[in-house]
Length: 379
Image 1 (cartoon, rainbow, N blue to C red):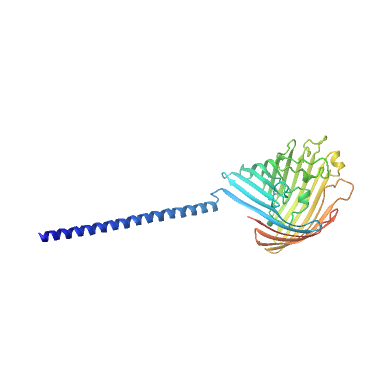
Image 2 (image 1 turned 90 degrees about the horizontal axis):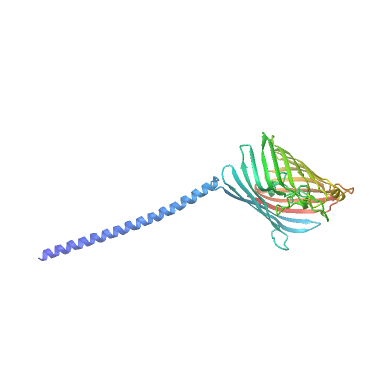
């Protein structure tokens, strides 16, 4: 009997130990499976993040963000000022291989609001449609195809701290309108743009009567009694060379404010040359405003030109000289032409970052001498 009891106890102990061992093994297995599930979940997250990154790098995300900005220090006869002149963000999206959205939002002078010096502006917001391999259409708010810097004005792309005075006062850069346009290539190296857009609305009285720059409406509830028609041709058949010209016509730049319609015609021609370390920019632009009222104000003709040679000492350092002459009262009998000479240097520590310095001397009907310093970027 004792032997039987002892044997039974031994068997029971052995079974219990086996069961405990099985439970421990089962718990170990359960913990192992749970850990593997966590590892798999973590790996999936990592793979998804990597896939998203690769997709964005390949353009699969289809949405892009960019921008530019520039800080200026002006030490001139007229002012000694530090100003974050422009802070701009670009937003774009590709809906498909043939339909894209582009936009540009700008904060000028760092602070906007009642009584503040700056403005928040929508400078571009348009849809591009590819019609075929050589032609496209756009609709919305876009930069007028004219001059050199109106469409390409990011700080690393031009010499000098401030934009040249001709493409500020005669071509009122930055100049955007709302409407539609066609662009394309007529032949290898020969490109065209044609646009129908909102037009200028110049004041008809006061110190700025019929001054072109003061006619920009910026597509903010813009009066559209009269539209503007723009055509541009550009030849880029030689590497590093662009020759271009623009014609714009508007029936009435007063938008029916004046008793007599004031038609306006803009003619512009330019050359951009970049051959090795040598560079050259040259531009001429002139407005002709019909009617007795602009003639009485001396603003029936408004014209200007500039010449800017440059030289890259190294890929990172470039020097330039620019002579500009412009007159917004060229139609009067008084010598009202202004001129400005700038000499300076650009330093690019990175191709998209630039440090600038230039000396400025004005003459003729203007007098504002001194120097300018600036830093700019684009991305």
